[in-house]
Amino acid sequence: MNVLIVHAHPEAKSFNSALMALAKEQFTQAGHSVEVSDLYEMNWNPVASADDFAERKSPDYLVYALEQRYNFDKQAIAPDIAIEIAKLQKADLLILNFPLFWFSVPAIMKGWIDRVLISGVCYGGMRFYDQGGLKGKKALVTLTLGGREHMFGENAIHGELVDGMLRPLLRGTLAYVGLDVLPPFIGYHVPYISQEAREQILVDYKNYLANLDDLTPLRYPHMDEFDGKLYPK
Image 1 (cartoon, rainbow, N blue to C red):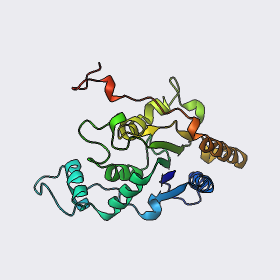
Image 2 (cartoon, helix red, strand yellow; image 1 turned 180 degrees about the horizontal axis):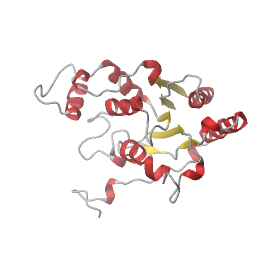
Image 3 (cartoon, rainbow, N blue to C red; image 1 turned 90 degrees about the vertical axis):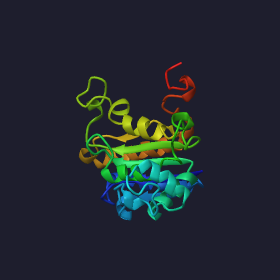
Image 4 (cartoon, helix red, strand yellow; image 1 turned 30 degrees about the vertical axis):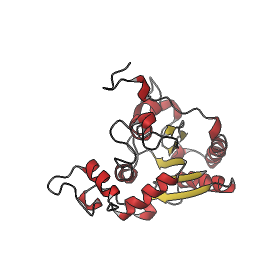
């Protein structure tokens, strides 16, 4: 199996980085091929702009998604994007590893999503959800946050985590491009817990990764449930 870990934490000695390192080590020891895109270490450019295109189909007005398609076909897309797309196309499993920032991903990871999950390759036309361009691959979100577990849920102070604040990422991004989205792994209250508790999270993550094949992907729409105009059947 080919694994791509996209990691976004500004501190290399962070617990979040330790989770990334554990995943890399465990998959490697199991005989899998692992690539890591450490976005801060790479000084990844998160800004989607006209500078991403060496050629322009429409020089007078930028439609970013259309230029993505055109420039990818022309092999004229920015080199840093092309490298990440190649990693993504090779991968069987994509892991997004990050700390929760303001109920979302860090800006640098959002920029990776904006620039790498390109139209024409990952989605386009009627190619989304189970018909998306990345169908057949799996995705896993591994995140850390400061809140306690009881702070998340239907009637909790912050509301739902998986079906609430993570929905734009899990459904609107990963599932949308065709990935089978596994239940996320969440490290709660990380900045405030004991070293023993952190070590237990690492043990739990190791066990989680060892049993990925037993996990049922989250349920999102299937195209055959809708008609040609995308009304429910």
